Length: 191
Image (cartoon, rainbow, N blue to C red; front, side, top):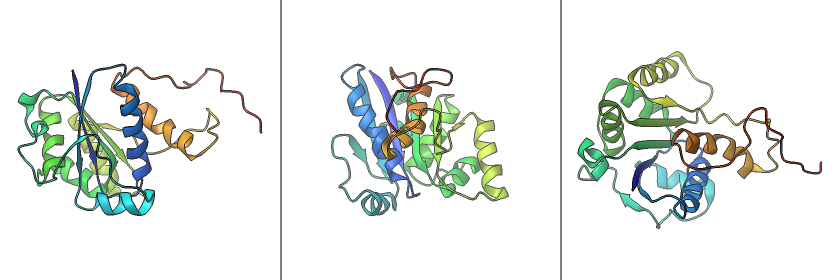
């Protein structure tokens, strides 16, 4: 059983989290996955505002202050934490080693255990402090995947555009996904 924790913060970009969870649902048929979910305090408000849909109920969801969640400890053997989207406040706390909620505690666990921590920041423009914090997280062993879509696959709609980021994250988790890689022929479509 592969164990992955997903954290959703209050940064704009809930669609990235929604698409990520949608792909994880599909992958459960191919790969035994245990997916745990945590929302920051502001994430449900942003999710509802941006997506105009209810929060997912098909994953085990933990409260942001629940330090008894299994992924708050390295002994639970979660292999990865994906924070999608990741607010710059969350990045700053992780970079500084501040574990003031379940999200930052789980990030600290991933770093100390040398496991996958993937941050998908969605902010623009970035000031020097943001850049320094992102660099610090990378130096500590985290992987930064900015929510910067690619266009070589010629995405036909917003979901396909968002998937150019989401599928890269799934690829970093070594999950069995198919997507257009650089140098391969783009799917044909009429213009």
